[in-house]
Amino acid sequence: MIFKRKIYDKLREWKENKNGSTALLIKGCRRVGKSTIAEEFAKAEYRSYILIDFAEANPEVRTIFDDMSNIDIFFARLSVYYPVELFKRESLIIFDEVQLCPKARQAIKALVRDGRYDYIETGSLLTLKKNIAGIRLPSEEISVEMLPMDFEEFLWALGDNITYSNIKMYYEAGKPLGDAVVRQLMRTFRMYMLVGGMPQAVRSFIETNNFRLVDETKREIIELYESDFYKIDPTGGISLLFDNIPGILAAGYSKFTPSRMLKGSRNESAARIADLISSLTVNACYHVNDPSAGLGITSDLGKYKLYLADTGLFITLAFKSKQFTDNEIYKKLLSDKLDVNLGYVYENMVAQMLRAAGNNLYYHTFEKENSTHNYEIDFIIERKAKLCPIEVKSGQSTVHSSLDAFLVKYSSKILTGYLIYPKDFKRDGNTWLLPVFMTGLI
Image (cartoon, rainbow, N blue to C red; front, side, top):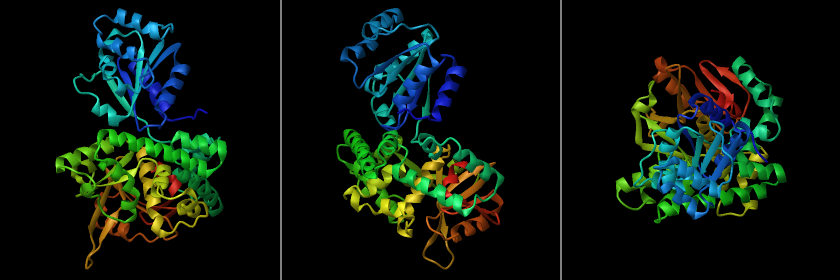
C-alpha cells in the first residue's frame, strides 16, 4: 500500500531544476516513509535505479566508497553487487539509511561532479549528525524534511481526494461550512488524531479498522525511537524526556525544564536536547520575548516547549504504561467528549499541522494585571510581515481572553488573530474562529 505524499512534488522540482548538479537528502524521523517515497520516485521518474540500503547491504558494499579516486572503477565494483543497467542522466542511485555509511555521503561530492546519474540519500537526522566524524560533508547536497502525513494526505489515504479542496474553498471564501458538515468532518479528523500520520499506523488502520492494532503499531514505532535515543544517550535522559512530553504538556507548564531528567552539565543537557529536536521526532516551540515581525530574532532558545511530531504517537505515549482498553483518550475522542483536561492533545495536533504547513513554532507569555498568572498565546506565526497569534481550545468555549489581551497590547503588529477549536468558522472582530481541521490553511 503506497500513499500519495506531497513531498513527491518537491522531489520532482529538484530533479527538473537541479539536473544533477546536487544530490538530495531526504531527512526525517524513522518510519516516516523516506525510503518508500525515494523508491517510488525512482520507479516513476527514471529509466532505471539502484537502491543501496545500508541497513541490509553486504558489508563489502561499504568498502566500495573507501576510494573515490577513479569513478569508473567505483561503478565497475558497484555493478558486481547491483547488476542494474544505468543510463547517463536517466538513472538514479539511492543511498538509503546513508547515516550507516558516512563515506557514502562524503562520496556525493565526487559522484555529483562526475555527473552521470542523480543521487538521493535518506537518513535519520539524529544519527546523521553523530556519524560524520572524520568525513567532509558535501556542499553538493541539499536537503528536504519529510514529516508525518498531514490531514489532507490522510484523507487521500482513505481514498478521499475531494473533501480537503472543499475545506480550502470555504476557508478562502471566509464562510461557515454548516454545523452538520463540521460534525462529519470532525469525526474524520478525530480518527486522524488517533491514528496519526505515520504510514505504518495509517496502513494498519485502513487494513483492519481496529484501533487496538493501530495502537500496537504505534507502540512499536515508539520503542524503535527509544532504542535510538539510548544509542546516543546511554544515560536514558533523552528517552525519559521524550516519554514525559505528554505529561509535561498536560501539567500546563509555560516552559520545559529538562534538567531533572538529563544528567551532566548544562552544556551537555543542551546538546542532548538539540539531538532530540534534530531527530524530528519532536517539534520545538520557542518563546518570543518581544513579538514582532522576524520572530526568530527575539526567540529564547533556552525557553521552549516540545510537542511530538505525530499526534497519533502522542496519544499512545500518553498511555504507554496502560493497556489499550484503559486508554481514555481514544474513548473520549471517538465520542466527542474530550474534556478540558485533555486539551493538550489538540495543542499537539495544532503544532503538528502548523509545522506540516511550513511554519516554525513560537509562543508568548505576558503578565496579567493584578494577577499572579500570565496570559499565554499558544502559537504565533508571521504573515505579510505581521503577527498571527493563535489560541487553541478543545471544547465548546469561544472565550479567548489571552488572545484579546495580546491583540490590544500589540495591535499595530497584528494581521489576524485565530482561535482554533472544534466548531464551525466564525468571525469575531479581528479574530477568526476556525475549526481545527483548517489549521494548515492559515
